[in-house]
Amino acid sequence: MAKNEAHASIESYLAAKNLKHSRPRQEIIDTFIKADSHLTAEELYHLVKKKNPKIGFATVYRTLKLMCESGLCKELKFEKSGDCTRYEILKGREHHDHLICTHCGTVVEVFDAELERMQNRLFKLHDFYPQSHRLELYGTCKTCRKRGRGKVSGG
Amino acid sequence: MAKNEAHASIESYLAAKNLKHSRPRQEIIDTFIKADSHLTAEELYHLVKKKNPKIGFATVYRTLKLMCESGLCKELKFEKSGDCTRYEILKGREHHDHLICTHCGTVVEVFDAELERMQNRLFKLHDFYPQSHRLELYGTCKTCRKRGRGKVSGG
DNA sequence: ATGATATTGATTTTGATTATCATTATAATT
DNA sequence: AATTATAATGATAATCAAAATCAATATCAT
Ligand SMILES: [Mn+2]
Ligand SMILES: [Mn+2]
Ligand SMILES: [Zn+2]
Ligand SMILES: [Zn+2]
Image (cartoon, rainbow over the protein chains, first blue to last red):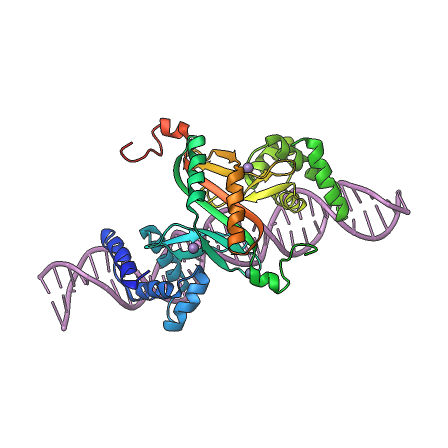
């Protein structure tokens, strides 16, 4: 996502809520956009610290929350990535699901229109009004298999 | 799941690990099987307390963990059910995914063979060896819509 | 019954996330 | 530029589910 587009998104949200612009906020958002990956709060905190060592952990959490509320980013809680939440920039991107390597943690973004259609079919079948869904596929990536990790038993 | 089948599953696990049979363990497992639903540790704790008020919370957690390790039950962490983990009896049942009402918390179990096939197609496409997946569909159930909750705007 | 070992319940600790709070920064107004 | 009102900051404490600790008790092979 373009930095300016992200800023437009956040700025309209800040304006609507009478919130102020601030240095730390800018730095955290810019660092996150630049990183362009599925980060934990701690990972982002360390990245931001490199630019501005004064930044506090609480501000990173607060800014992530703000970004989620504004629709700019999204919380991800994978089953097999420890206990901590990851975040991803969402704005300006298509909806997608995730394929996760249980060995190296690699995250691949996937989208399948037919899969989405079938999910909607299930909503209809059970008479639910659809709001959202979460699909995560866990497995072993090619690289990890080559390295002899996550092999099929006997394979 | 039949109580005897569950006990066979857990007992073979206990035997393999040189673990002992115990009253509290039995009571917790029986209560969970009888409840036959997607429970939190706390909910199960309260159910078990009715039968045996001496039981401790820690033992409920320990037994749930044991059941998960033995393959008898499974952790569920839904996005929109507060922060706490739910558990379900797994052994002797088919794999299934979940449809969750974001208003009343109702959980509907769903299975779609074609959906499963497409997921496997995605694993193949990205050269992942498939291990597991998680699909959750969030929406508003018929009952909640009738009560005017979770309506589509303008609908 | 004995003894070795596992389990229990009460309690404390952990670890990620939030809340609190005095100080500082922002931005509008004079 | 100084004033003012309000929001944001960083340090720290609080929260909460889940795990770890530990002395007392239960299990089970002998
Ligand atoms: Mn993603
Ligand atoms: Mn289920
Ligand atoms: Zn991998
Ligand atoms: Zn409902």
